[in-house]
Image (cartoon, rainbow, N blue to C red; front, side, top):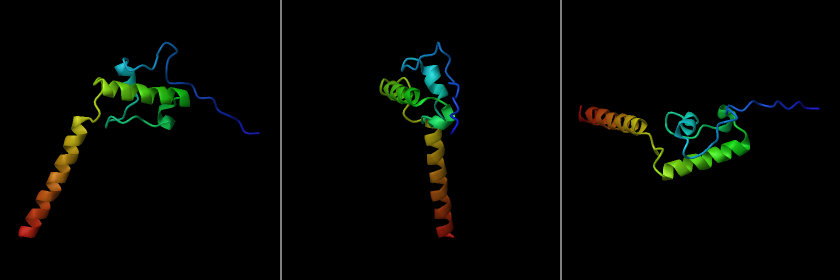
Length: 92
């Protein structure tokens, strides 16, 4: 017979997943602003679904950003630098 490990939820019993609780939602997002997967958050399936709905609702109401600006700027900067380097090589 297979043993089932019951994980302890990272949420305190008093914490409720809600779109208005931005600090709690922010703790389940990665640096890029994406929702972290269930295996890393240790949430139950029901809690993860509620978290996803709450994050999407908070984004829609502009309480959370859809995209984190620092990450976007870094990607654009990297892309621009590559183009600049390629132009220098082709001119030489």
